[in-house]
Length: 162
Image 1 (cartoon, rainbow, N blue to C red):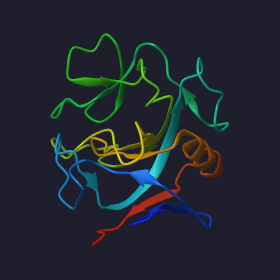
Image 2: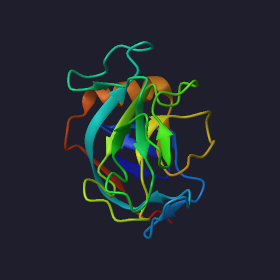
Image 3: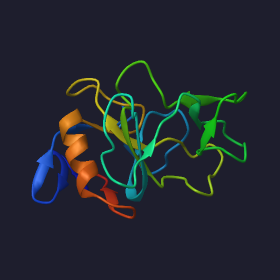
């Protein structure tokens, strides 16, 4: 998969997508809203089993206590954690549908550098053109199509676009 000015290219198709409100960055920092430039590997798929069917046989269901740590400096920074979790985190099980299907990348994972950014996912967009906090977001049907075609280790290439 390659991010292009027209969208995310995979298998001869280009899927419209949005990126972080901070644009692209070669120096990603926690909270900057930027999408990190580089070659990132897919390390997992998470999904809401109460809302959608498993998009791939290797996808992992999101439970009510599942969170993602954005507590920079903690040993579990940029890892999935479970509630109760007293440190800064993001809920994976959301009221809105943004995280009904999440493709997890290896940005700053598994050995996270404090402050280098967390939770760089591919997920559903809010609407066309609406930026993310650093993730790559797509139309729900496109995201599902992509999830069904990829595997662990598939690369998400984000070049420094001009």
